[in-house]
Image (cartoon, rainbow, N blue to C red; front, side, top):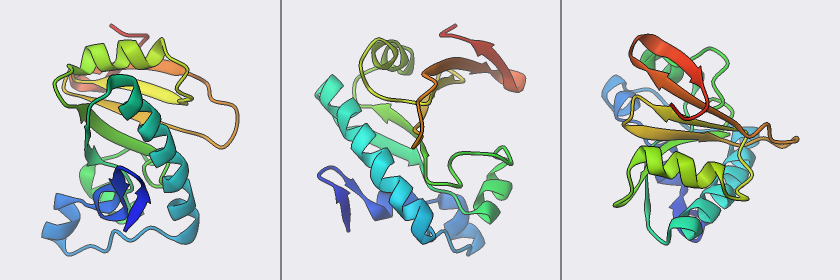
Length: 143
């Protein structure tokens, strides 16, 4: 089922860990509504780069989030965050370009120089840019 022209409910809820564990990763109605906002924002990111986005993680049930070792207050649980890469664009360049654009993000995190975490909010976006390194150390800005 399409949420927006380029993003499906299946790709926004798929989890290898949930599949292996047999865990249900179906979003409740509120998280599903949030996924709509998230996908609309990801459409803007896709347009910014003119390239497809590969989602590695978006919605996570509380159980799946615990299994993956996610933060207890993770925006993934609310359907407000996605981890992704942009085809043929490095994660560092992805963060740089999104941070300099008008895309309305709440948090934008370069994670381990491997992928990008983007979260949205229904309130005023903080436009917080962070970098996380080995050991789980968060640094302000793009480092």
